[in-house]
Image (cartoon, rainbow, N blue to C red):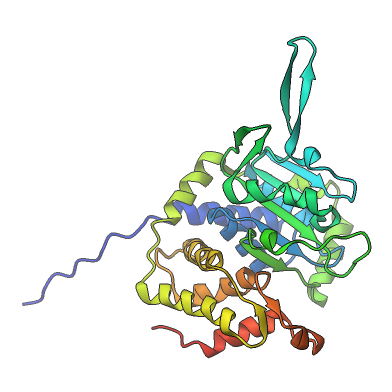
Length: 325
């Protein structure tokens, strides 16, 4: 006599997948290719993480960040980082109100849902440091007063890796607070032709084509749903082994911290969900490992002089660690 097989109830990810597909469709109206970039941006949004976009000028870093915000029905602000930008220009400042005869706090552009910090490495260290607390704790403290940010909260930062004039290198503590660092490359020939063709046919501004799809409540709902994605113990061990290997690797001067392990866990869950699964696979971990780790490690000076990059070392680590099945 055959036994009845009872499958465990799975999470209903249909609504989430439809919403993700709508966002991708809206962004694809303007951005040619870059599918993995869009996947990672949505993954970061659902995993409640911040993203650093790195690439040479003209590869659509800023427009991609603006498109993501435009496709969501949330508040958006942009901060153009410059060498004379002060912390108060970002966080806000206390202003004396003559009518009330007392100081009142005027909120800065960091009070929003999605914040684009353009050319983040152009501001000096004290202005960059102003973002430490808000990136990690979603709050700021000014004059002894604590201000909580409204959820969802996400910082999208851009930087140019080539130009060194008038730039200030981001400190490791700040880099570690970005869930992903995504490197944007040049388009291939076919994509370049498509970009030029679209621009030739364009009659309105790029952003006018985009419509809102997700509101704040739905984003928060999906972020909570992500927490219930199944991660088997052998995958938790796999994540730990990858991160531990960065600390013992002879090519690396500085390895990744436990924050990287937690980032891989959260991002792995979100990446699985947008691909329609309520469980994480080793492939999910491998997909998100590079953008999570490449900015959290430092190569030894000898290897750096040889032209070896952090992404090469991380890919080597992923190949040497046995994939759990």
